[in-house]
Image 1 (cartoon, rainbow, N blue to C red):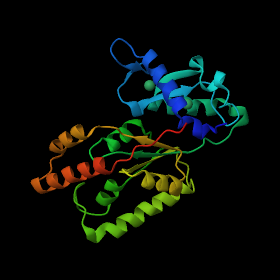
Image 2 (cartoon, rainbow, N blue to C red):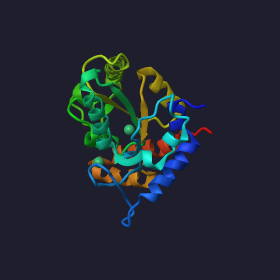
Image 3 (cartoon, rainbow, N blue to C red):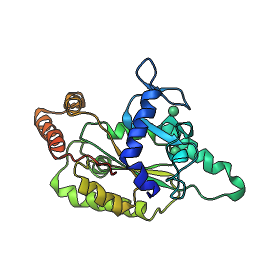
Image 4 (cartoon, rainbow, N blue to C red):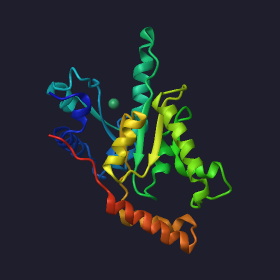
Length: 242
Ligand SMILES: [Zn+2]
Ligand SMILES: [Zn+2]
């Protein structure tokens, strides 16, 4: 017997998901979103969504959880809209929309901020340490003097508390972090009560290539190559359970 959360982390789901994705890949090599019709380019953008939503009480019924007719491939942005509409549609029994908290992790230069900016809507909250550094100083995105560090971290912690207590009327929160070590990710998940972790799986070579388009000086470049290599040296992927 699995809970809904355990199911989505199981090998069983992962292999079912792969079969579905293979079956629904078009001649152009992409799965197209069933809602907006656009090709879904990245794994982290591709949601295999259950039409009849899973709960702890129906997840062990394979005719619901592992039924190809009960799933559709949808992009991350459209998936959020589907769930919003689903809740809004039940206006007679109105319940406030449940806030969702995502941890978005991956190597420096993997495109975490870019992705979040593509999927977030105006009611969403974003915690990006790089933005906090910029907000309180004259520095660019790549200059992080030690003298400001403790203030930056205190501000980030204040945001973490806001998210933890789901304080305010925002809809989704996206918390951007490196998160190479599994233990660090688990602790952060616990700390802010995150619902889901999203790995921006851009590979090492591509991340290194992107350094050149950031307008860094030579010294900064060397530092960023180090940051990226460190991430991939330390990286511990999530493991699936049986
Ligand atoms: Zn879509
Ligand atoms: Zn869904």
